[in-house]
Image 1 (tube, rainbow, N blue to C red):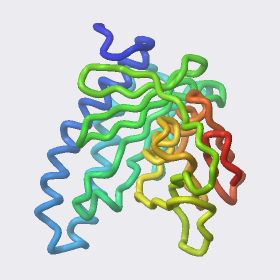
Image 2 (image 1 turned 90 degrees about the vertical axis):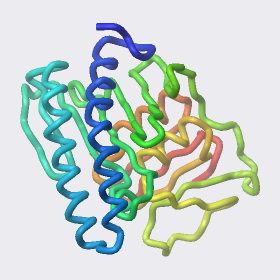
Image 3 (image 1 turned 180 degrees about the vertical axis):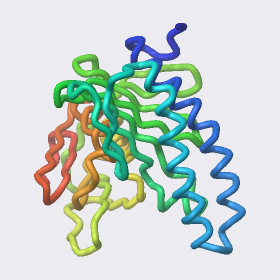
Image 4 (image 1 turned 120 degrees about the vertical axis):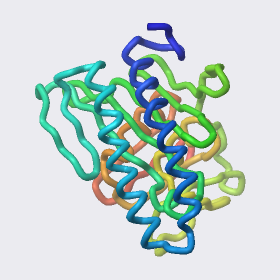
Length: 236
């Protein structure tokens, strides 16, 4: 196959699967915008759309590693015990309200370690991706660029993303709550956020983001109580 982005053939096949799925998701987003007078109807529609994402992308991912398992927030499918795709729609609550800030998070894990990570924003068609040991990149408009975490450490300069119950005090600087943890982690990797703090999340939503942060020079800790990602210079 022709390579679409810098990286392995497997990475490109996974991106192609995301693109195929995203075209339908963009259509669904247009539909949900028309349902805003009925929030319950919009929630039901998005729930069905998320199920279609899984079904659609699985058909393509089976061509990448046919015997791999699957982990999503709702589905756990045992494969060969070695390889596993981890998939989630991050920012679904935004999607429900016709807010375009949502993303598909997709990771390939082998022997318990994430090897390939992709976080794709379907509406602006921006992809953040990484392969273990090869750095992290952003792809948009047919151009790939390597990304790095920020180098800011002065508390007043920091912009920190939050995904919490609102009881946690702001650490420093400017606080942001976007409602899409997968993209928040990608933004830490790209230096758009200096750190990200969250209550526990489903692993499917953060698997790809973890590798993005690590490969861009940042640090991430998930201890079952909190998730904390940073540029390595911020004290959380």
